[in-house]
Length: 233
Picture 1 (tube, helix red, strand yellow):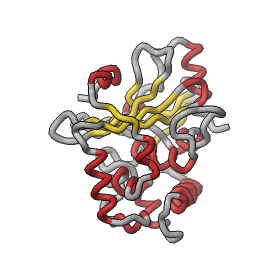
Picture 2 (cartoon, helix red, strand yellow; picture 1 turned 90 degrees about the vertical axis):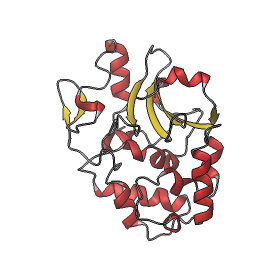
Picture 3 (spheres, helix red, strand yellow; picture 1 turned 45 degrees about the vertical axis):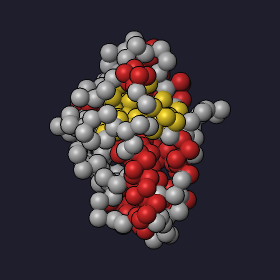
Picture 4 (spheres, helix red, strand yellow; picture 1 turned 180 degrees about the vertical axis):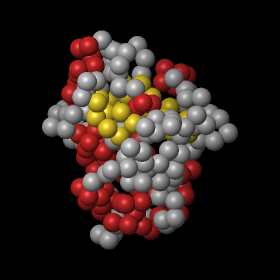
């Protein structure tokens, strides 16, 4: 079961942001999505990737990353090594909310996908003055596990290749980018459509939390702010 985010307050959570610049981070972080690709495909050493995987799965220190969004929203990425296996939870948060929204989780409940490509593309630029993960390339790669869209355009492939290359991958990274865009192996790529009445993207995926409009339980003003946050500018 996904751990509610407030329960993490009594857990050994540590700031994960310094890890983003460490050798081997991206092949370790994206290991589930990149099955079949060696760390060298990311421009990394296998030993560095293995060491980073140990760090991400350390039972005594659970890394947390915050992707700040417009309007005070954020996506918080939490590693959880309290059970037999390490899992990763992705929460959509806002300081005014009493309960966070779970976008995706690779625990035994397998929740996802939580974003379609138009939404993810709208989140790549950080708001001015924000704290957390603000680099657009790092934001894209960090949120890739939440994505699962069967209709990603070619611009998505181009964006992922660019992000990989900026993070140290070889120029010829198209095959890796296309593989990463196939979605997390727990939920894959699904069909999405935009509901004009609800003003929200919806997903057909069996395990997706997006079968219902995102934030449909929120007050109208908060839901409108959430829709604006996820709308391409």
